[in-house]
Image 1 (cartoon, one colour):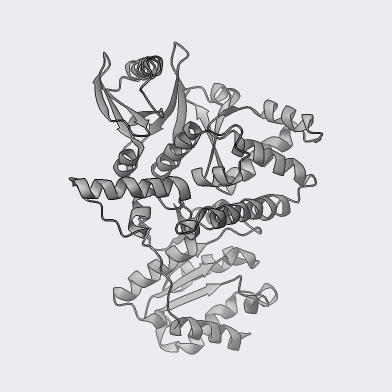
Image 2: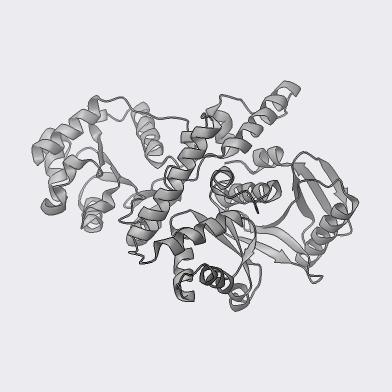
Length: 434
């Protein structure tokens, strides 16, 4: 086995790295802690790891100081019985002069498939001169569970599918302020492509038929490997039907009681507790996200209906029946995805007049911001409804600024509470960054 590991390490040192499009995620390392990259399947975690390796090489780190192993490699399967200790034995038998003197950068893909990986990683951090980087999203352990297992010994970073800025980089479109007329036209055209293809790197340049086929493959893989197999679910059709309902009702309100009743109407015997588990497991897989109402009372926040969003707006169009989902829902889901990249603290808001604001977000600087999503403000009744709701929320939360995100409209409106910025979604995506 040692000879096999040595061969794999040597092969990597002779290989060319596929680094793809540079991601905007800056994963900072802390001495004595593993760096963990988590996220949905096919979001580019392994490629992001290769980008980190490439940066190290460019900074002068010798290639021999990089230890990379993908534990999905079937040649490493015997490690299940033999344990991970021989990984170090194999590496230092190749490069004995590095032990204790030079920093070794350990990159482990899908290490969670090997029993005892936590203790091995902990020992590495305590006893060796090294830095450790881990990714994972297999059916044997979801990425969030990896972070949980390493709590206190790791720093976790989330990687999502391409943001709009990363999509611009992927298409070699430069973005800099102030925008020229030509640059703005290129960016707006690129947004239409992003609107169609979404953010998964693999489908960014594919035609619609291939994109839909691959999205459906993602959907099935996440359902069956990360949910049904992982949790040994005895009624897989109930989970599948639930996932389709959630896709069809993206950006809509739901309650566990309602979902339980829906599954019952289809003939499934899924108790309320099981449905709640299904939802939690889908969130663990970064497949769906739940947004609660903004309320100081956790009990009220939990008992009120919640809103559901998917990881990617284009995935919705590839999977949904097309009956319930409309472009307004897709726009709201896209805005949610952009906000989720910068904050986990996202809620929807109800004013005293029972008017709904799509998002109130605690931003990284701890300030709060209000965002309303509306395809068009052209209809007078729509304009009045959106402005009244946002003005009420701004007054209640003592915020001087609110934002309405539209498909194409741009305007600045003064109200009693402050300033409301109406902006097209492509400009919002540039502003929110990441």
